[in-house]
Amino acid sequence: MTAKDKTLNDLFLDTLKDIYYAEKHILKALPKMAKAANSDKLRAAFEKHHDETEGQVERLEQIFELLGKPARGKTCDAIEGILNEGKEIMEEYKGCESLDAGLLAAAQAVEHYEISRYGTLKQWATQLGMKDAARLLDETLQQEKKTDVSLTTLAEASVNIAAAA
Image (cartoon, rainbow, N blue to C red; front, side, top):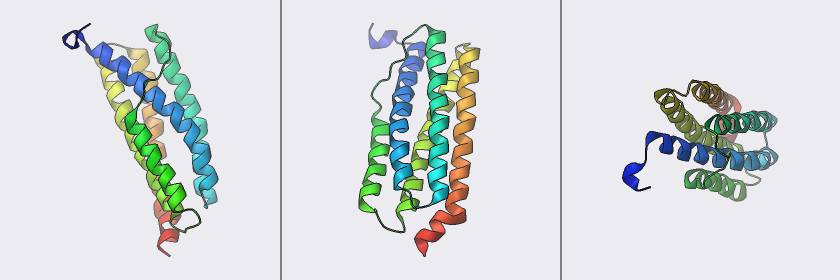
């Protein structure tokens, strides 16, 4: 298949593999972020999101099944970069008051990436007439948006205030 023969279906599948890879790596990163957090509320938020992410991985696996394709990830440079930034923050700010603010910012970068990907995938699934896939993607999209809002609330209510003190 040449580049000219690639369709929206191919792009959908490639992007699905990309977010699947991303979610699997986020699953590994969240417990480390939870362990590094000073704030109990932030730790709890990371733990809650870890549980949600497991459900998101399952939904992605359902979509692969609907497509009759194996659930397989494809290296996602974007998420690797975002997660590496989070690792750097954990190393460079360990023991500092500002660590949690940095962890929260890294987590929101992840959320915004996911929101962008899931929004696009949902739109493409709708375009391609994949109603079940679109519904599953929307479920995850709404969950990611809620997580982003709760992280913002947590940042404004306590974490950023503690960091500035």
